Length: 574
Image: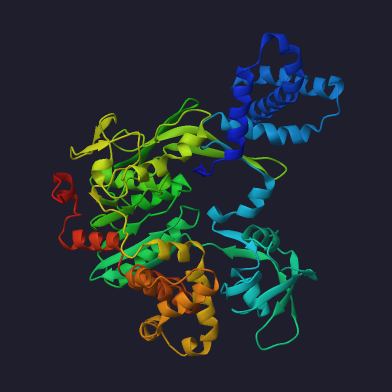
């Protein structure tokens, strides 16, 4: 099973609502005329329904007798269109247009994914994608290599950080129309296929030709793990994929070797992934026979998932960090910890996605994700927030509405009056139907965030200037043996003032008061991005997060023994 993406197809929503409004205005005297206008859409929806039901027949098997009866009628519709429709129709195009429309009329997470999108997304939840293996930045309308992934195909042929890609397949590959999507679609491709690049290197006048053979490039889902305080380990999980559990166990082992006995699991901005990965991860913290979750759907009877006592951290204190974008498998993990009174949830109310999708792949490379069940946490609650079938616009506005009413800054802004009440194993009240509510609320950190900072950050200049600085000072930065030595040096450099000069060349005027107000935040993030360019992720996160309020609160709770099962069950953390 796979947790669906929460990306919403707004353009299809708008067209669907427009069509619905138009149909409401049809008058009797114009009926015959409107039939001709709407006939193609009616046909398209019929085709989509045929494909949908036909595919469901293949998923559910021959036991669903009603499906087999419907197939003959839908086959007749398709055949009749081909034989008798007044105009020549490209049936494939109608299907491509109609299937998303049909799925949009269901819940917000059932979706159609085109073959092009599937190719671009790759198999990142599988822990890899096929490409050339580079981290890049579009700088001055040119694809610039920030890093060649160690062990990847680009590093193997000699491509280096700082190289600029000027041509692809002997065709110019620069200009204002160059976008990240263009780069991804060009550089990614089937395994063992070749791509020719023309590289401009700083110390060479002529272009250097490279032929790179695409290969599977690993995609990490555990971004970093490090010892954040005495006997406390921190693990950042960005998604739940097929390799996440193994990466997670490796991180746990490393931290335990370093003397960590308690753990902070950071699921902020983790929008989900595979349900099985979350189940296996939470099993590490539970004793035998604890219910982790259960799933249930119209065509799927209830299925329970229990812990098996094989976990390695059954006595460790655990704090789970959530924010408003933590969804799906993240909520499965957090819900099991919370409902079993196993640890503390710190942060803000999660997204609220309690639906389970399965993915059906079509022969042309496209796919359909269909919601087949709801999952319930051990107390019995479903965390899925309210939605209206076919109305995805309101659903997509939910986070903005939360922000507008102050929920990210004040727990009292969260209204619980109409939410169903449940209880944890220790009797604590928890609420369903609207995400996972944190045990300990931490508002968003806005220190140093002002209009100047937002303009610089939103324009991507923090990362961009960090790369420019890295290129100018690469020899010096490479002379340091560790990221900590490099960070000590960077702390003495006027990075913020230099950034302000750089931003001015990009049409962002200097605002001395606001720059001073944001100085500490800007300095921290600039140091972190520069360290990432040279030393990778671990140093980046440790610098980037050194002042993060949510991590500090988690450390405080653990050091005060507030995240033990006894303290949690008694509510002694308050």
